[in-house]
Image 1 (cartoon, helix red, strand yellow):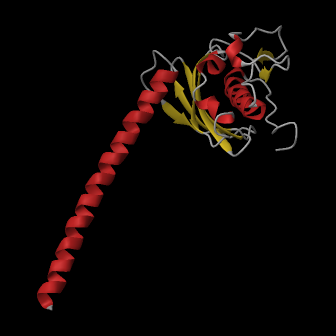
Image 2 (image 1 turned 135 degrees about the horizontal axis):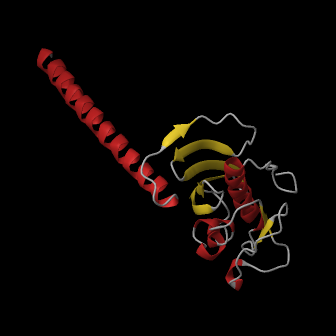
Image 3 (image 1 turned 90 degrees about the vertical axis):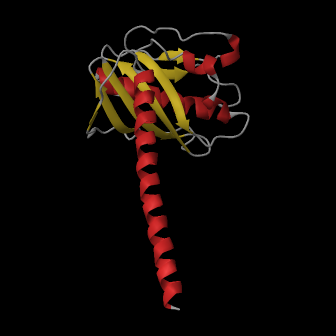
Length: 194
């Protein structure tokens, strides 16, 4: 009986040690991936400092500052749940990169915000507040975002059949640009109250 207890304790100690070593490795891998993501979204940046965010925009979750701009983590509600994005914004307020990191939108419709590069590319190199255009075009039309006169929103073609998800992405990007430029961004939910 005594040997059995000692054996169980030895196995427990070994498993605890392995678990501790794997946790450190997993954390190091997470840190490496996170730094790679930040540097990809804000090209020509090396070091980032996480700065506290105490503003009023409910979409902004975290802010990572580099010498040439920021990477802003945003979360807003889409059609079926929260959409989490990282958006790179240069010091002059232009979007340098964006990625949807988490979304639970409808398969084949809203879930396309994860992979529809034509839709996401419309935000690149733009600065201002973004709105989804209502003229019926979709991201497959090949249209690009049109710069709007000062004070007006930039019209972006949404994903056909996924207007709510497209609007959520536009809100996230508008919040990130608004943080950098100091613009007052309305972070309301969908027009139907969702």
